[in-house]
Image 1 (cartoon, rainbow, N blue to C red):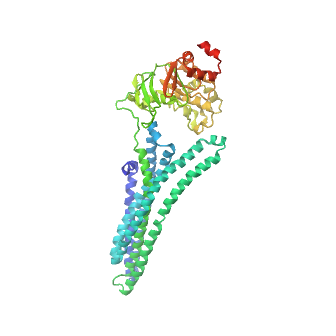
Image 2: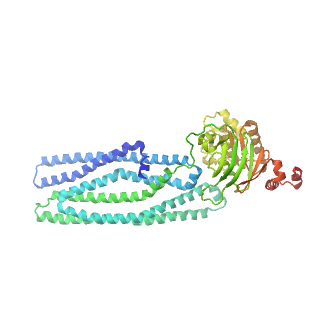
Image 3: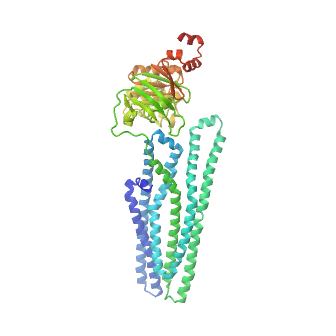
Length: 584
């Protein structure tokens, strides 16, 4: 896990290495200063001259300045290294997610990925910062001060040997009890983020159904779960402070009382005032270091679960990848489903698609109709290899889609979804998602085919009109037409409309389909629709029912021979029996 995380240090290795070096020099200076002060006190006690005092004073000032300088340098390099590490870590997670297949993404909820990119990375950043600075400073100072305490205090320093096991047992107990709570709290963080995400995304629905109170209670419940677990963990961690304070005061009391007694009774022969002063300082340094070590353990305890969750994403391998000798050219837009069956998960009891046998010629227009849950979208997702088939094969241009380079295949298959997504930016910037090199003339031509040019030019800024995040400042129909135009700019060999004209009136829908026939005759067009009017002029119409092909035929053939199509057509067009009988 640590090896995986350290890969994100990269260009910040120098800062990460310099920080412990600077900290070490700072600690050495801090540990030598009490020794020099002890010598100075002993000299003063012996009645030295002012020149001696000035000499020692000058040495102390120089050492203090050196300690201060390297402390500042350590702080700067530590900040650079930790912030850079967090930046790289977020980038690595985000880039990894971009390469995931839908199957990979299904394993992680959106809210969980957001938590890992924000809260978890912040926790790991804090732990990394402590490890390259405090985790070096504290043990180093502990060892140095412990050694100097024995040098200066002799037998009195054994008090630390007695207290160390006590502190170690206390820390072990705290960490053992707190770790399970931190493991559970991050899962509840995911649910909290999910509640926020759903509420914000569906705010219009929440307000239209007056469900604010319900959403508030739902959020309060999730927040209460997080609070409850964090409170339990913090109560356990709170024992750390009193434990450290007890050890600190016990040592100070022992050193002050027993040390003073030794100085007085031995007349300075066994222990001098300077030695006692240095021992007190080293005692404070030792116990302060131990307190910081305990804080580091607490931080590492908190971040360990965050680190595990981050590594879980970074180590996840995409279930879809391009083969070694991948095919980069798609010959044409023909599509063949040969005995295809598909399950979203190996654990699924029922396949989403079963025994699909369908052959589509290049340039053909195919309509797909079926009830909700008939797996229409599942079928077309196999064409651009968003999922892999469980059985059989899908061929595009006569070649199994698994033999193609993924980018090459997907660049030749344009999919326009019902739930269209526009990104914040101008209309031009959104359109150029289809082709980043598209000229203004090409964009206008695509928008004319998609019946979007007219309403775009009605905006004061035309194609430079700014689209808000999610396309909230355009209507549903306008959004769909912009997304169709974006797909057309790819100049694909296959274009798939997944119920993507549902928010468009039937007249505009007909104009768009007519434009497809006229301007892109060689492109294979697959239209998934709920309205029979959207597919009735297709070369063939596929009826899906329960993940299986129920029938394939033209509009007239299906009206005569297929009950499902006839029922849908009749209910939508309110056709009387005479019209259907005439077709028959």
